[in-house]
Image (cartoon, rainbow over all chains, first blue to last red; front, side, top):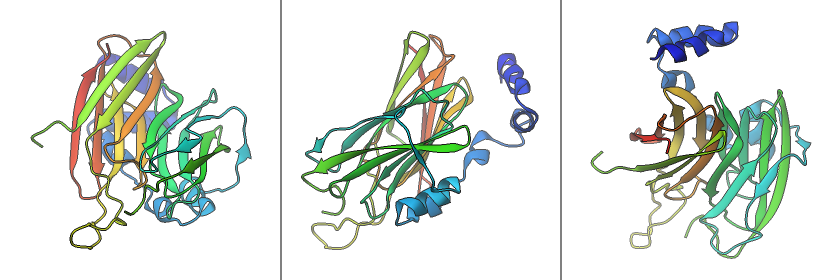
Length: 156
Length: 105
């Protein structure tokens, strides 16, 4: 670990610098701290269930500050590109496909310096809404976009 | 693992570092049937991807089966510069993992 990193660790709040010291001392590896894959969220069969499991709340506020870039019509539901961007100081960005058997597709947790931007590709079983939930300032903000799927991406 | 599963490209664009990564992985949902045996193919998918900038975590992605085969991931962060190290690691539901380092161009 370089001195610069150590300094930025120490600049953090009391809580985060405790973790920083633990990491710095080699007690905890970063992967150990973060290895908490939210199984309940991914197994949830509803959008609310997924959000409750993931963010302990399913109440979201519609926001015009979230931009979802995805095709209007996806020829192949197995590969639907989606880009979510927001000027908000995002702590996490959650991507949900409303009508998939398990709606939660991916959750992105922002670390130091990460901006509110992620881009990936998801599978969509059928025509559905794509929902992007941005956690910022302890609140959940959401935006959605309907994507028509002509060939499904789940099963065969 | 013998072959590289991760390809990283990181570029500066103004103050922002733009990172793009492609991972080779089947991302089986557990719902697909094998066309020959007619049996379900067991789920096999990446659960967690961690991205580090000079050893500091910038993004953790938690994925379910709905992320497409051979996943693509792109994100941006502030505070990077040319030559900085970007490390991306993944681990899947069978405990397989890989990691790869790249440099900001």
